[in-house]
Image 1 (cartoon, helix red, strand yellow):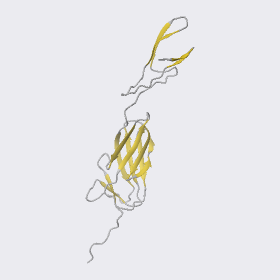
Image 2: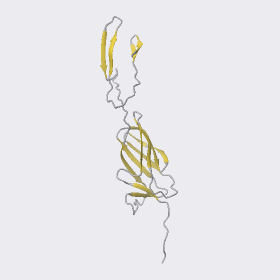
Image 3: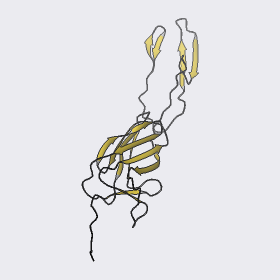
Length: 178
């Protein structure tokens, strides 16, 4: 139902949308002037060309990449897909999404970090002081939000190719002397 008077009228919907719609159509099924003349109008834009798209689909992470700053660049000898880091190193978690994001928050090994980026490419870096060994560093995108406000979460310990991170802060020791 439209409300208004004179030459200004409006209609609002608060329907619960259940699927994406690329171009919402607006139809004035009938409008009548004071003399009783009627007309109809159907459009997908307003007078200045603005249209509406309904997006109810949450964003998805497409790719994940883990990097670290360790100057030796070594992997765990027992698990070659596991990157080694020590106290003082940085760990960066980069990810791309299937649609542009408004914001993203990441936890790396429990530390909450506001991700930086734009469009579909985002990253979060920690240089937290690592005080104990961690076998599998966790990476959690606690919330990522698309431009329509749809949110999603993602938790993993590996990137898109199976790479993970182990924090090793234990200094080596000599086990035998001869």
